[in-house]
Image 1 (cartoon, rainbow, N blue to C red):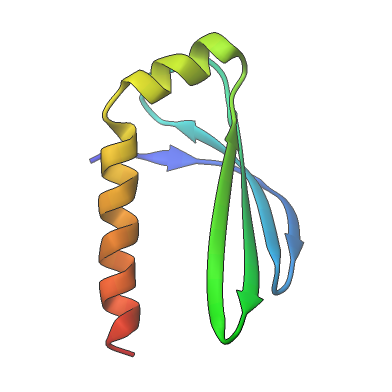
Image 2 (cartoon, rainbow, N blue to C red):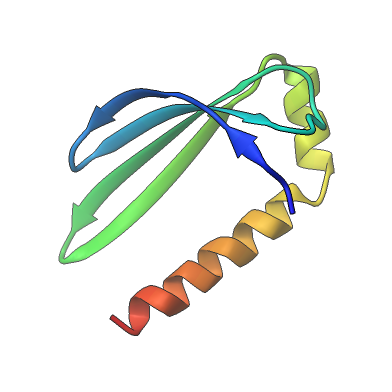
Length: 85
């Protein structure tokens, strides 16, 4: 399990959340800024998540890791749960 913390920098209901992200046991340098934007079209909501890292080098390291697989699995599971509501 990976612990993490951060600070909300902006909350604009119902469309946008901006927060910082840092892991308790950092595996990349610096703090990430995560922006979640929600848009609705024809009754369907889309979440777009943008993560800004300290440098291109850090970003490239994250992209080379298996993090994308974990994030994809998490969002797939969230979609399964939401489908049951």
